Amino acid sequence: MPKQQNQACPDVIKRFRQRHPVAWEIDQALFDMAKCTDALQYVNPLNLKRERKRFERLKSRYTPEFHYRQLAIDPYAFRQALYRLPVADIDDSLLRKLYCAIIDSYANKVDMLSALGTPRFLYESLRYYGEPQASDVESARFLLFAPELTEVEAEPRTITAQASLAMFEEAVEAMELTCSVALSDTLVARAMVNNSRNQLVVNSHALFTEREVQALIHHELGVHMCTTLNARMQPISTLRLGLPGNTHSQEGLAILCEYLSGNLSITRLKDLALRVMAVHWLVKGHDFSYVVQRLQTDFRTDPGVAFTVTTRVFRGGGFTKDYVYLSGLRDLLKCHASGQSLARLLLGKMSLPYRDVVEQLLARGDLVEPVFQPPALSMTVKKHPVMEYLVNSIQ
Image (cartoon, rainbow, N blue to C red; front, side, top):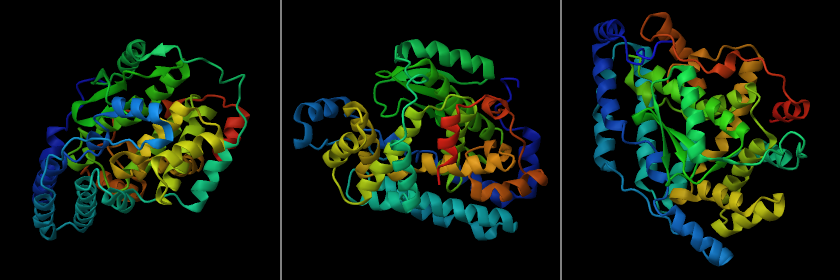
């Protein structure tokens, strides 16, 4: 796959504009409006390092007071502009329904971001991402009480963030991706893709095992970066931002690729399960210190891990997104096991509920097939039987 193929094909754009002139104008306007609504740009605390030190010093007597970047838009004006877009003038019913759903989704998202750092943020997050169901909590508890495979997972974390850069850059070259890799000292996550910059950002304070680096390669580069680059080739620009429900599907696919490549560990599974439990307790009304303590006492979680998981969930005022990783894995694994093709989920920031819509758009030439593909989807790796049992037990 040549590196230069990361821009939309002019012929495809021309054809789409001729067929759907109103939809094209709406798509361009919507992309320009919504491109500054990436939640992760706002919910990551600016003072994480300082607040972590305070919490470690004061323990249960202190609840971190995180500060956040100011929202770059006027939420009221944004909503007004969204609903002024002439969606009713789109003559194609498939595209009209799609853009109605996208507009509603971004209205909800900006409502959430406008409440950042306030008690209302949790309510808006629940509207946008939802909350764990009883089956999600049961699956999380089941995984958290699974025995460790010490003979498989005893590898120490000796790879620094700086040393990992070379490994990520080597993977970028192998996948022929047009992107960069950089360090950051403001991330809560260990690594993430910045879609607007085509950049993989690595937490400068993180330590990794070899397996963890490989897992991130298949997760962040193999899925999130590939879908970012594939989305740039589409005439529908909003595929770069995300269809409604894309977090569940994209994160589920990314975890699935960790598993298919043989790099999903029980430790990683338990981390995803801890996130479900943290969201569950958050929604039940418990505070930061309570969740940190419960993660440690109920599941013998390392204090540093407990703080990080709880911070991920409480940032912004209550960010429920983290429970979807485990349920996403469950749903994508079912699709893969049933023989369903996952290729359509790679066109951009896609979601399972819109797969049929995208199939129709592809069939009539309004979209192009994805060029960049996750290596894990074509790999045949023998899984440890215990890991295979645990993954297939997620309900």
